[in-house]
Each structure stands twice: as C-alpha cells, then as structure tokens.
Amino acid sequence: MFSARALRALRPSSGQVTQCLRQHRLETLRKYPISSLMRQQRHQSTNKPPSAFRTLWRAHPFSVTTALICITIGGSALLYTNYYYHNYIIGAFHKFPEPVAKQMRKALYYTNISLEPKNAVKYYREALRVADEIGMDPFSDEIIGVKIQLAALMEKCQQYQKAIDILEIVKADNLKWMEALGNKPGNEGKRTRVLAMTTRVSVKLGDLYANEYVLEKEKAEECLVWAVETVLKEQQRRDTEGIKPGEGDWISAEEQGGALEALAYNYEEKNQHYLAAPLFLRAITYSQPTSCHTAVLMNNLSISLAQQVPPSTPGQPPASRAEFVSNARAWAQKAVEIAAKIAPPERNEECDVGCAVATHNLGEFAEMDGNIAEARKRFTEAKSLAKAIGFTDGVINSENALRRIGKS
Image (cartoon, rainbow, N blue to C red; front, side, top):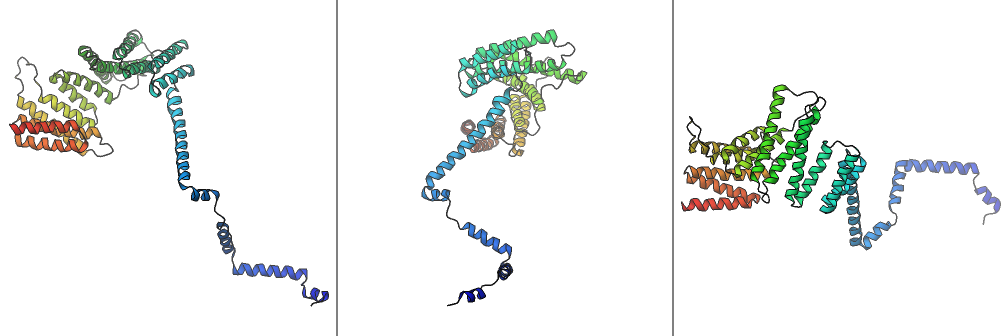
C-alpha cells in the first residue's frame, strides 16, 4: 500500500490538474470539433422516450384520428362563422345606422337562415319605421333595397301578388319623386340612381306579371316596354347632350341588354317573332362578343327569324320564307362557332346547352329546306352533344326529330 506521503507525492498539484484538464479539453476539441459535439448532443437528445401523444397514437390510432378530424372541422367552422358574421351580417349593413341594421339582421335571419315569413316581415317593417324616425332618405339605395328585399321574400313564399303590390308602390313613389324633384339642380346623381333602380324594378315586375301563377301578359309587356324605352331614352340623351356634372354612370351595358332580352322573350312567348328579333339583335350589341351568353342570344335570334311572319308593309314586297331561313341558319352557325371557341374557365353550362340547341336548330333549318341528309347529320350531332352534357330535353327533342325525318 502507498503511504499518505506517497499518495500526496502521486497527486498532482492544483496547477497541474488545471493544466491537465485544459489539455484534455484541447485534445477533445481537436479530436471532436464543436460541430461534431453538437451533432452528438442533438443525436442524444433525439433518443428520448416517446412522447405522450405518440404513445396515445400507438395505443388508440382510430380514436386519435377521429379526434383530430373533429378538431379540424370545429376550427374550420369557427373560422367560417367568424368570416360570415363580419362579411355578411356586419358588412352587409355597414351603410345602415345601427338601429336600422339591428332590425335588418333579424329580418335577414328569418329570411335566409330560418325561414319564418311572419317574423321577417315584422322586422323589415320595423327597419323601415326606424329608418323613417331617424331621417334616412326614403329614396336612397338602402331603403329602396329593403323594400325590394321584402318583395323578394313574398316571391320566395309564392305570394306573387303581394310582391307585385310592393314593387308597384316602389315604382310609383320613385316616379313621383322624379317628376317633382328629379330635374332640380343638385339632384343629378340622385336622379340617375332613382331612375336606374326604377328601371330594374319595372323589369322585375314584368317577370312577376308573366309568372305562370299570375299570367297578366299585357301588364308584363307594359312594364318591360317602359323599362326598355327608359333605358334607351336615357342612353340617347347622354350620347346627345353629354353627361351632366354629378350625374354619374348609367346602368351597365349588361343590364341594358337584359332589359331588351326580357322584352324579346315576352314577344317570343306571344309568337310575335317579328318584334322579338330586333330586340335580340340589339341585345347582342350590349353583350361581350365572345361569351356564352352572346351565343345563346344569337341562337334565340335565329329561332325568331325562322318563325317570322311579319305584317305586310304597304309599298314593300314581303321577305320570302327562304330569306328568313337563310338568315336564321347564318346566326345559328355563328352561335355554334362562338360557343366552340370558348374554353374553361369562361366556358360554362350555358355554352354547352347553347351549342347543342343551335346544332339542333341547324337540323331544323335543313329540314325546312328539304335537305334531309343534312338534317339527320345535325340532329345526330345535337343528340350526342346533349347526351354528353346531361341535357335530357335536348336528347328527347333530337330523338323525336330523327324519328320524324325517318318517316318522311
């Protein structure tokens, strides 16, 4: 055994110990750079026992997956609810004073969320009453919009006459204001807004009067004629006199075309195709040149041309049937060409159906000319197009046409 003295002799001094440790650390750093040590530490840290989540996952994979899905759905629903509230409940009424907006939110809830017409009407009326008390302009877009929304609720509940009565009151009140104050200095912008809104109301009245549950065709035509004449007169005045300061923009070309189109359909239903054709032609000029709706309008024009029997004009020879059919064929062919060139995302169902109908019509026109081979070709093509897009009426019509020419 070593004596205590010998042990003391073997024990290095503190200075030597410090030096040895320093040397050891230096040698360690030379052998294992810091980056290597850090990698070792990271590697060691990753070799930890499995987490509680991983353990739970391994024990109950189905339950954990279901819980995660529920959490995700719940979070998404919460985000959507927040978005909907701020954009549709709060944002939709940001132009209304809060007392009016409060009633409108209740009316909207009982209109769109939980349909209860009695409560919805109650809160629409309350909104109008509060608006009148606080002095809102009764001819503002917001207040007229509330009345239109109330009429839409009546239509939704199939109370068509009540919807008509509301809109007739709106139209009459607007026209009274136009007559009394529309031309006064300072009212230029308001006149444009009120006249545009009245035009839209009149087009809607035409639609309601023509409804199969109302069927007041004469009143429908009266409303639509007024709307079209108003649109064209105002546009002509602006083109001739120029836009006055403060007047603002008139209704869009698309809306102007919509009014013309609505009246054209009205005449078409009465078999007054000689009146419908010019309106369809004018509506085409307001539509985008290469759009699905333009193709539909061209096809409608072709139908009206093919079925025209215009009244005779004194001193002028009437156009021949062959001329009308030739013009109809040209417009239908143009409709097919335009629809064929439109690609997604612009291309929609209107394009597909319009193309199938126009192709069928080309078969009809060929049959009118006695060209049975061409008619059969067009009807077969129309049937294939209709079948491909799930257009059942188109398939039935083409099959009927093929059977018809097969017997001839």
